[in-house]
Amino acid sequence: MPMPMDFDVAIVGGAFSGASLALLLRREQPGLSVVIVERSEKFDRKVGEATTEVSGDFLHKRLAMTRYLANHHLPKQGLRMWFAESPQTPFDECVEVGPNFQVRMPSFQIDRAELDEHLLAEAEAAGAVLLRPAKVSEVEVSAEGGMLKGTRGEEAFRLRARWVVDASGRAALLARKFGMLRSLEEHPTNAVWARFRGVEDWDGHALRSRFSDYAKSGIASRAASTNHLMGYGWWCWIIPLKGGDFSAGLVYDRRLFALPKEGHPGARLKAHLLSHPVGREIFQNAEPIENDVRAYSGLPYASEKLAGPGWQIVGDAAGFLDPLYSAGLDYCSWTVRCALGRIAAEAKGESVDLEKVNRHFRESYAMWFESLYRDKYVYLGDAELMAAAFWMDIALFYMGPVREVTTAREADMECFPFNGPVDRLAGRFMRFYNGRLALLARKRLEAGCYGRRNRGWRQLGGGFTPDAGSLRLFALGLRHWLRAEWHGLFLRPRRGWETAAANIDETSSQPVTAI
Ligand SMILES: Cc1cc2nc3c(=O)[nH]c(=O)nc-3n(C[C@H](O)[C@H](O)[C@H](O)COP(=O)(O)OP(=O)(O)OC[C@H]3O[C@@H](n4cnc5c(N)ncnc54)[C@H](O)[C@@H]3O)c2cc1C
Image 1: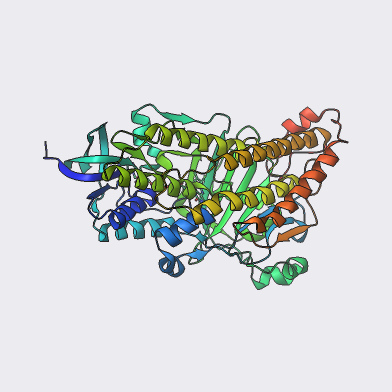
Image 2 (image 1 turned 180 degrees about the horizontal axis):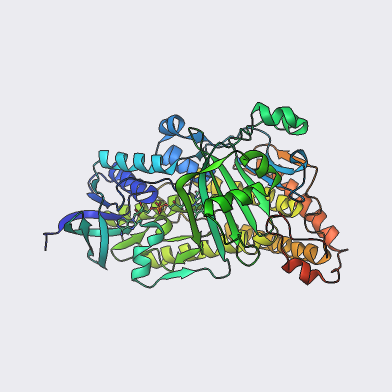
């Protein structure tokens, strides 16, 4: 048995969360020794490529990576959604909802293989010890610290540390070991994705010369946005990467949508992208890059606890909910902030209320789900209902978490969103209107008018800011919602609607409306 190597902090997993934590620990607590154990020899491309303004702020200010990001990744120009009445809707008549202008706050389209490699190299340069490729196979923890056992090539190793941090992503080493991992059965979502070459230039001459309304409208770059194709029970992301490749993926609720089972996943994904009129224009000559197609089923899960005596969890090892709105790296940054605060406090001899941390984490995750995602997939494909949510959800995100992060004290332990009284009130309001929008979507399905305004309009709004300035954009959403409520008063179920709703056209952005 090899002699254990002693460290203050031992981190399992050296991707975004593990490497960020190691780097910040070495910068801010240089007296602490840090070791990272990373299984892979080299990072592959992976999902988690579009940041929001929360994770953008973390990269820009907290990690101070702005110059590196400008040189190696792309600025993100907001979120844009596209709706169609049917697969035959002309491209120029598809509904477009998104920003009119370039954004005001830093956010990025990142190539994760490149970013994670850079963060890990920076952590090592800052003095963290890196074991790679090396796999942790056993973890023991106690109030006095923990022990990691594993292998590096043929050799076994043992590491002893005062704090063991799990940053192992979906492997969720500690949550599984303690039997604390819970899936979220109420939100049964799957995803399949790939990187593509040969994607049409959204801002290029070919589209501009053929579609005059498209060419004339909008000031911001569409290509630099995170574009979403929307349908009943599903959505697709399209994210540009530096160098010209695009990441594209499909996320769907298994209760509402099924991807055909036959064929290679890359071909099925492409076929699905082509079923949307906007996807058809953009992806007709595109091909998935070989060996870069992945799929997950059962996306959401969470650990019951985030921290305990001698251990802490960060990033996806703590949980994941839904990639719509790209909040994954936000949660990674919140959990990393939380670990930093806890380790800094305990290193000074202060005691930390870990039960409170765990309670805040659980409440935050539950509020995040209830206010934003519960039953959302029912109305994703209805342009009017989703536009209502788009403006209201994003305006409240800016006035809440984005404002909090940009003004928060960094060492603040209570760093999870949705925990304060105002957050809770806002969360309850969001739950209410998201619930109403889902209900209205069901009424529209029953009445045969789901997607009734899925053709012939664009709504390109001004920029969001993390203050009351976002109220103007909130009002756009409110107007859609109130109009939908008024319309809903006159809706009556059509005869035979159950058959129609069950008979979802999988290539359409809507359920079949003909009965
Ligand atoms: C479909 C989908 C789309 C998404 N899109 C977005 C998006 O647009 N924007 C966004 O912000 N987020 C997105 N996310 C979320 C985002 O991908 C994750 O939040 C993020 O990648 C998590 O990073 P991490 O460092 O915590 O974990 P990971 O990136 O999973 O890293 C874990 C690391 O741990 C290592 N490891 C695991 N086990 C061991 C072991 N036993 N020993 C040693 N090393 C080990 C692995 O090799 C890996 O390098 C998406 C997620 C999904 C599922």
